[in-house]
Amino acid sequence: MARVVLLSATPEDDETDFNLAPLLDLQKCAELDRFRIHSVSSDPEVAEVILFAEFYGSGWYLERVRQHPLVRKFRDKCFVFCANPYVIPFLPGIYAGVEKRWSSPRTRAGTYLGRTKNEFTTYTPSAHDLPYLFSFMGSIRNAPVRRDLAMLKHPRSFFQNTAEEFDRIQHRKMSQRERLDYDRRYAELTKVSKFVLCPRGLSASSIRLFETMRMGRVPVILSDGWVAPAGPCWDKFAIQIREKDFAQIPRILEEREAEAVEMGELARREWEEWFADEVLFHRLVELCLEIKKSRRVPESLARWPVYLQCLRPFHLRRMLGARYRALRRALG
Image (cartoon, rainbow, N blue to C red; front, top):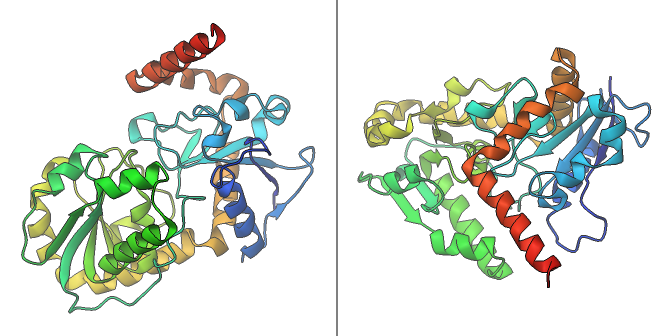
């Protein structure tokens, strides 16, 4: 049994409605926890795990977490849950967006918390007579493989590029009514499909993978850098196809069409077992304890090699740009 402090480094006066959402979701999961093995504590001195649940409120590079007094005092029992794309895992923890080549014993793959919940992604049983063999609805701008998928042709497929709508969502220019309509159309399409294409987006993972499981459909994963979260029997209910083999999708799915209903039902059961609100707090704490138990090098030393990722082109450009803008502001 572990005592767990749940917190966020996001400032309390943050005026957005989403930077604290991961923490609020995780607190809700702790209240609903059906295992009742681990407990929430307010005392970092006695806690075995201090878990930061973060979005962008702690900084693009978790600056506020890294500088947090509890991290400096209790570094070996501090962990982060973060599903941001382009993330650098400066602290050990659970990250949905860490690619295979950058994963390490300090990180575990995970799901999503705090993203806008689609109220329409509810479970409905699959069926052999669903109209679409496979479908995709999303922006094709987020990854080259998504643009490749737009070229697929099949009489029982549905593909919709929603890049413009996605941009409006990202820039918070979509009304609540429009967003509800978008979410409804997305969920309804998934429910009338046997297989759902789940290509990588801005990061190697995609929230649609977990939404597809929740709705009881078969996810088709196209992300060479994706790290499978531990627990589920992924090969029994999901199909993973290399990005360069996207043209084989129609043939592969036709060959496995008879398995779709059974695989979809298993996908739902595995979601309930590993990612549902009633189990997620327990699963995340277990992952933190696993990292802690397997540690061979003190975190005070193990953390330094990660900083080399700052030299990756995307991060180097972003950091230099931020420094330049800060200097211009300082000089007036």
